[in-house]
Structure formats: structure tokens, C-alpha cells
Image (cartoon, rainbow, N blue to C red; front, side, top):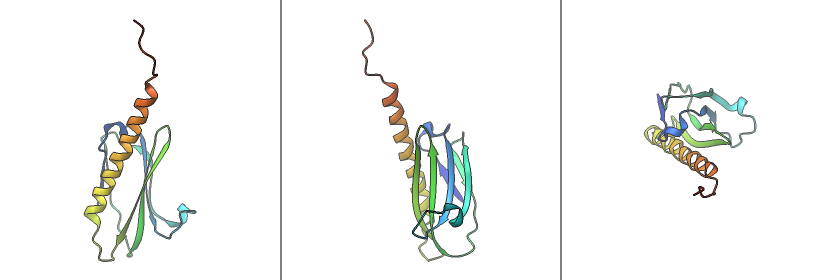
Length: 121
């Protein structure tokens, strides 16, 4: 079970896509190396939960893509069945990455909404 939680509430209305791929060293043909794909969708409660049963050990990469005015992609490598036991760290890392992306989007919106013009007296 993987649980992703938004730290920033500003992410809740934005479409988020989840993809898990085999770590082949190249991401040229994502469809060929994708093992799990969740199309972009809005998660208004701020939480994404999913399960995937990895049938063989190996190195993988999680891609979390959030679309706002721009596209933000968080990339996190992890291993399955190699004795690394990275699952708790992986969940923490995903949560932290989503939080950072949220702050970047939020700050970008704050800057673009301020016009730099002082109010009239």
C-alpha cells in the first residue's frame, strides 16, 4: 500500500498523475517501461492511496506529475525485493516531494497575482 498526502492544500484542485516505471536508465519510451499508471485526476481530499503487487524484484522509479500553469514532475527511485527495505522512507520522500512542489506552485501564484502597483489613495 502506498499513501501520498498533500502537505499544501493548494495542490488539492490540481490534476495529479502517478506512474511507476522500471529503472532502465532511460525514460524515452515511458509506455514500454511503465508497470503502474494512474491517469491525471484531482484528489480533493488531498490523499492518494493505491496498491501494486510487484511480481519481481528490481529497481523502479516513481513519477508524480502535478499540472498547474506548468507541469511539475517529482522523480524518486526505489528498489523492490533487493533487501533494501526502503518502503517507509519512500512514503516519507513522496510526501515531502509533493509538499515542496506545492510550495513552489503556491509561491508562483502569489508572485503572479501581485501586480507591483501601489493602491490608489
